[in-house]
Structures are given as structure tokens and as C-alpha cells.
Amino acid sequence: MGNKKLHKAKKAKNDEFYTQFSDIEKEMVHYREQFRNKVILCNCDDPMESNFVKYFALNFSSLELKKLISTHYKEDGSAYKLEVIEDINNGGELDLKNTIKVPLKESGDFRSKECIEILKEADIVVTNPPFSLFREYIAQLVEYDKKFIIVGHQNAIGYKESFKLIKDGKLWLGHGFKGGATHFINKYYENYAVAGDKKEGMIRVSGVVWFTNMEHQKRYEKIPLHKKYDKNIYPTYDNYEAINVDKTKDIPCDYYGDMGVPITFMTKFNPNQFEIVRFRKGVDGKDLVYTRNGVKKSPYSRIIIRRRD
Image (cartoon, rainbow, N blue to C red; front, side, top):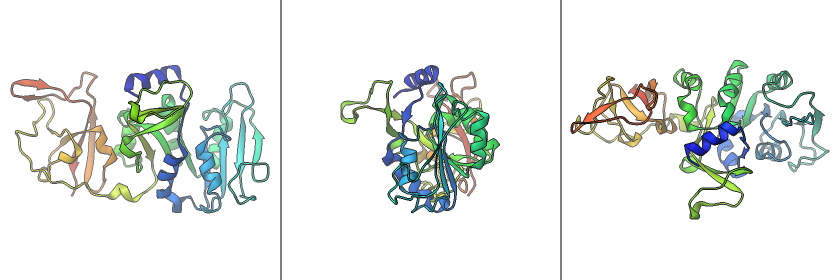
């Protein structure tokens, strides 16, 4: 799904993009040790439909969870909270034997006072929050000092609020979706994927990532650098003292000044190898510009980085 369709989703606030169980399973495996004896909260989910809830219910015993909590959003007043404190049936099934269902007085909106009190009890939040409310959602997690693993779009990297967290080392990307894209279960949007990539009842979305503040091994993998700096290949911006690098794999191994790299660099970012300096948008009058063969060019949004090692 292109950015125009994503913006349409934001405007309509029909943010019901349900994450596949397989995608959740592939990401969560990298944090299993950190889940032990923790209270997990899935607060943007329909407890009986959410694959996040299903994953943690199924793995409740093997992960040695303390508690699993999920809140249900319903404007008509029938919202509820679902808790799992023990896998009595030893099978991960959400039934009356191992769940406690408590009606909520409010709608189940994560911003409500009732849900904030539930948030305070949690150790780790894992969910796919509404794309249209990403700024508010992540600000709340930071305010209440919560660990989290959440789905978002890579465009959120450039949001003023989240980029500051990234720059300060308080937010980074998880292992990620294969190829930077996935299929979400959805109810509202036509699947515009090419014929070979269509899945019935699902929509393909590119540029999706996992945002987290939990450690994982991939975060410290060094980017192999092989290219040599050549001023004819790496032009310097006319209006900023940095060179332009079009692809992460093309970062020169022998350059130690500032470099402008694409936003996809964040999927490879190693904080021990690079320092993030700032973010420059390409559409708000602060465009980075360089001149090549007498022609001025303005690349899309760039993250300015410099080497640490």
C-alpha cells in the first residue's frame, strides 16, 4: 500500500490492520528471555481476535509469564478487559478455565483513565497501535516508562517526537518484517499488491517496522562497509556540510564526516558504529540539495549520521 493509501487510512481513522500470527512469532522469538515473569499488555486489540493475545496465551507457560492482559475497544460501552494468570488447560486456549473477563466502565481507549491504570500494571506492551495515533501512543509509553514492542510505519521515524527518542537512544527498530513489507488482515481496503503477492482478505503494506526499546542481538550487528569515498560519487550538499549516500550498503568505509542516508538506514543502525546527528525532511522547505553535472537534485528525507568507530 502506497503512502497515499496510508494517509487515507489515517484520515478515516479506520486503523484496523490486524497482524499475522506468523509475523508476531518471528519477532517475539528474539525477546523470549525478557518476557519471563513479566506482565504483558496488549491494549489495542480485540482479545478474542488478536493474534498478539493468541501468541502470548499459547506461549504463556513456556515464556513463564506472570500475567497477560488485553483490553477491548468498543464505543458503545461493551468494552472489557481480559486477563490470563495461569494456563490451566495447558493448551493456550482462551476459555473460561484460564481467563478472567472484566467489563470496562469506559470505551477501552488506551488514553482513558481506566486504561492508563491498566497500563501502569504492565511491564511490557506488545501490539499494533492505530497508525493515526502513533505519536500519542508512543508518548504515553515513554511517559509511563514502559518496555514495548509495537508495529508502526517507517515514516514515523521522521516524526519530531519519535526521532528525538531515536537520537537519544531511547527507541530503535526491532528485527523487522521480511523485505520491509507484510500482509495485514483488514476489512476496509482493497489489496493493490501485484498478482503474485496477493492474499485473500489481506492487504500488503510496505515500509512497516517494529519499534522497540528492548535489546536484541541484531541491533549490534555491524554494517559491512566496502566502498571507498569518491567526491564524484558522493556529492556534498550545497546547503549542508555532509555528503549524500543513496543506499546504506554504499556508505564509504573511509569517510568520517557527516553523511545523509535514506530512512531505511535505521533497519541496519548500530549505535556503536554510527551516531545519529539529525533528520532533514525533503518536502518542507528544508530540502537537502546537491549539484551534479550542473543540475540541482534534492533527495528524499535523509538521516544525517557520522561514524563512531
